[in-house]
Length: 316
Image (cartoon, rainbow, N blue to C red; front, side, top):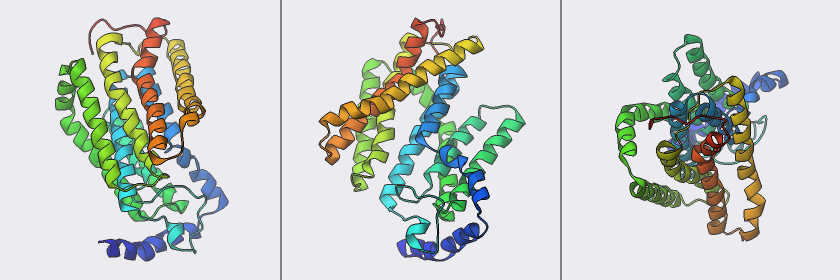
């Protein structure tokens, strides 16, 4: 199997990337460059929070769960397969920029496809549906235009991204029924089990210090949002309704504090980091666990307390 993948990387895969490179000009690269940002961690943080806090809470939960599952699976597959990028295989490939991490599957393509696909189940207007399809397609093409992913990386990213959403939609009702039936002890137990499984599977990939972060990050956020969604559902129950000004203000307040948690905790936690794999993973886990709690329940609680959001009268 590995020989087959290598033959594609050195043959057809490289040929296709060189074809894209043959007509890539500075202007073309500039046109596709925004897609690089539109597949980053910070972009998805901005997107998920605006949906969850200010547009539709239920849709926000769905998008968050799908994104986190997709992000962790992508990191797992990348580190497990450890496949190179085009410019690491052929010196003839000149990337528009270089990036860290392995290539297969394309993380930008997979996560954007998952996000777009789950949002398609929420939108009713055809033009929005069309934009989401265009977003996932152009995202994949942009990775090949820039020379940072093989076509097989992109194709697998599209396939996995869609499969995640198909499976989520199929199991959504049963999952929702199960989660809403859980009491606090069950929620804590579920959080511990899910976290242990994700960490255990991560270790099976034999990650190094540079790649353990990509596996730890989504696992930590998942560990934060599971109890966070529970406490929001049982205690806070905020509403995304309100005036346009209210929605904007709560988003600005929430995202500013989220960014402080994401970046502000880093130098503080570095004081106890000896840069071993264990401590590096631990301080990252703490930072993103707190971020997950803030996004899912901390910010909604603050919104209700400061009257930036009203509380719902019934459990959602």
